[in-house]
Amino acid sequence: MSRFLFVVPPLAGHINPAAAVAAELTARGHRVAWAGVPEAVRQAAGADVELYPCPVPADVRRPPGARGAEALRFLWEDFLVPLAEAMTPGTRRAIRDFRPDAVVADQQTLAGALAAERAGVPWATSATTPAGLGGSLATLPKVEAWVGAQTAGLRARFGDPAATHDPCVSPDLVLVYTIPELAGRPVPAPGVRFVGPALPSTRPAPDFPWARLDPDRDTVLITLGTVNSDVGARFLGECVAAVRQRAERLQAVVADPGGVLAGVGDDTVLVLPRIPQLALLPQASAVICHAGHNTVTESLWHGVPLVVAPIRDDQPFVAEQVTAAGAAVRVRFGRADRIRVGAALDAVLDGPHHWDAARRLRGRLRAAGGARAAAGHLEALAAR
Image (cartoon, rainbow, N blue to C red; front, side, top):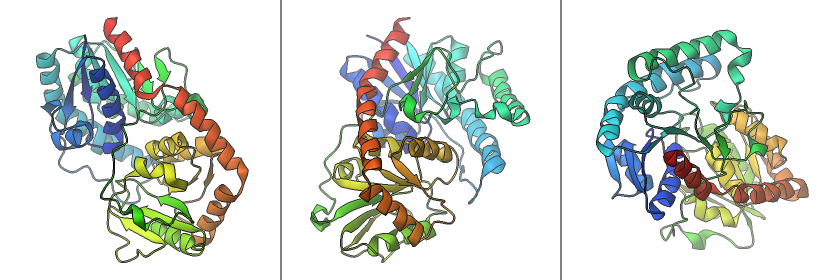
């Protein structure tokens, strides 16, 4: 049996797919360890995991409203580079002590890729979004050169100075948790494997007030993920208003981790700081979200069409793909009001086109193999 070390950032959306793959490897008899923030890893992967703690920068909060070049600068200068610097010592210790046959490094934990290549250990990229595989910077040579300088500086300090590949994309294996139909036109790479969503086992949610859901009305899930509370108050409020205007046939469950909708809930709108998304999706008729990759693929896994309002980062890319595939209607996050959101909801709920597309993609996503397929590719990498 082989040993696999997963290196992850303190972000739930990045840890959850890796945790599903790790669980599959463990079930097959392999030994799995983690390098990351203990609290974040244990919440997704279990309290008894083998774990090598890694510190992270104290403050990586994004400036509210950061977009475009400002968001890219923040991503590298204030998140990816400091994260790699902070996590490298702990990751090196994990490789030295655990002696993995292969390292699985999240796209955003460059410490995992660089420490593995310096130690001569095979490594795979865990790609929670296909956006970085499309060569999108090729048309922006100055930006591409600037990003290249960031990775070159990190590699000179922490990796193999002789290596020339992008440390965000393993030359041996890239696990992409989607399907080609939702990946745009990625740059061809021999190691890319589209495995579909790697979903954890759906856990019962006994604390959720299931009795509050009216079986005679369609349920709409509304979420902006866990890191967009700083900009989501107005949009969530407009979504709630759009549902209330259709209260005779719709009800909503809203994820509100920032508490921006305090006192809003009633028998049509259920507002909670956290929602059991995977448990709720089989009962949902539509999802309104920020086009976060995990939320989009989880919704489509259940054949649920979406209204997408991308905010930043890879979300516009994800929104473009799912809209082009016919399973979503896109609205502008900054301008969407109850009228526009309501019209988008009516379109995905009332017309057969979006339902048909969502169900077609459901079949393709499930056929990709998910955690089982990812585990098989990792086994082959370790064997090489």
